[in-house]
Amino acid sequence: MIKIAPSILSADFARLGEDIESVRLGGADYLHFDVMDGLFVPNISIGIPVLESVRKSTDMVLDVHLMIQQPIRYVKEFARAGADIINIHVEADTEEATARAIELIKLTGSRAAVTIKPKTPAEAALPFIKDVSLILVMTVEPGFGGQGFMDDMLPKVKILRQYIDRLNPVCEMEVDGGINPQTAAQAAASGADVFVAGNAIFRAADRAAKIAEIRKYAEDARYGTGTV
Ligand code: DX5
Ligand code: ZN
Image (tube, rainbow, N blue to C red; front, top):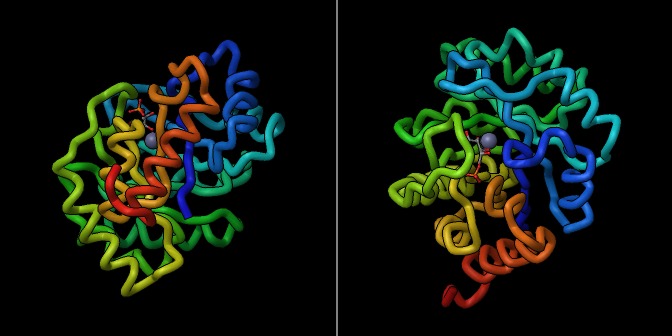
């Protein structure tokens, strides 16, 4: 099933509640929440107090993407603040600490996910594939919205689709960075099913129409004739 996850990094933070409501009404499936610490990525964004407020204001599924070093230090706090899905980067700590962080996330009742950066091979997700409910493949270098989609990530998406089908078929595969209807179709044809989009949705004149368009392009490419 295709899911659309608007990234609030591209929202107007002074009008965050209204922006979130616009994508909820527009049919979005998840709300993507980007957390940056200025160390793991060269930018700083939003964190726990904002997540708490967002949690109180919406019942949407909150997909929290932690671009922070040693995320195990904070997973409990993000779970307590209301994250439904907690995404941690495999590059952010040792393999052992990442495995422990995944266990901890699941103990809190949140869904665990791992994320891989563009230069990280698909195989880096393999030690965790049976223990997570989602794998996120970055299709830009993390840190900023509004970058161009890296189509050289498509072979990696394809490889991960094969691993997921073989080892944990209920696991979702998400792509994040430079997603618009056309790039969503490319990623869907390679096997992605969850599409994060910041600029494409929040800068659109009609957000509901943009969400529907991304969904249609992705669905046609993934399940349809493949002619998109
Ligand atoms: C980048 C973030 C993305 C970002 C995507 O580090 O992880 O979620 O908001 O923005 P767009 O869709 O504009 O590339
Ligand atoms: Zn993200």
